[in-house]
Amino acid sequence: MYSEQEFIQAIGSHQGVIHKVCNLYQREPADREDLFQEIMLSAWKGIRRFKGESKFSTWLYKVALNTAITFYRKERRQPATTEWTPALSPPENSPDSMQEEVNALYRAIGELSGIDKALVMLYLEEYSYAEIGDIMGISINNVAVKMNRIKTKLRDSSKKYL
Amino acid sequence: MELDDFKSVLRTKLEEPLQLRSPRELERSIHSKTNSIIGKIKRSIVFELLINLLFLPIAWAGIHYSLLYVRCIFIVVAIGCFLFMTYTALFYRRILFFEKNIPAVKERLQQVIDLLQRFTRLYFRFTMWVLPLVFLLGLVTGYRDIITRPELAHGFRWVRGFLFYALFFAGWSVMMYFFAKWYIKRLYGNYLEQLKASLKDLENG
Image (cartoon, rainbow over all chains, first blue to last red; front, top):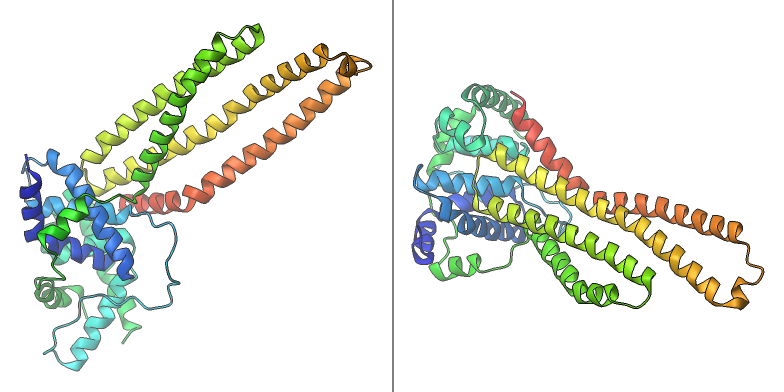
């Protein structure tokens, strides 16, 4: 059982997970802030049932993705005229052509559906297909099929940004 | 460029800290008010339960009123309120359980869709159930009004009066039906569609 102090401490050392999910799912800083808040609240409400069957970071991914995918936003604060620009930027020392390619992929990831974004994020975090399947609630085969489709989709859609 | 090539570049960058928050800021986050749809439904249910509780003393007074028809109306309304309160209280308990559970994404999507559909059904049915009750109430009070006032009862055409009232109420009911449907769709329709699309996306292998 986590006390409030222990919970804050655990979140503090894993808060990167929440930031990554917020950055991937929301464009506007205000929406990212709202999502961050909702993920924190969901995690706090759910922590009592967390018995350590999985790693804390895996559990937090589950909370964060659940919240991000079912996030309810009543109305846009601003019209979505700006293009999706992830908070993450490619390494500064990378060559220009590589930066362009990475940016193109970033944009392509931004166009994916909420579910596909979750799969890509977990894949990038080096989770196995079995773990991804467990977090998403689908079979390993389904994860594999989806990942193949996503890779093809990203390869094709990133071309238009190059 | 393949995702797998991109993977290593992104992973390096992902490991870097992002706008890290202090323990105090994190603590503030867990004591703030939720804006989630489930939070909104919870608040709405609490509000409805409170309104029902406030109505109880009025219903109690009505049940002990001297006129029989007033007593009957209040008994019917009180039974309706009791059933509604029981249902909403059970629904609230379900939401509390739901909040504490952290299932897989697919299961969560199914749960939110189910909760939202139950809530909108409850809202719609309540609106529709109230209509016949209001119809009867209007009929009884109207009838009482006419028979106790000779100036109204004199020359009153009962059949025509009843038909007018029934037609007016039928029109009103049709309007309420479409209004409730439109309002629910406006509030939750797009969100529900978005959730269903996500679930379908996840289920498609």
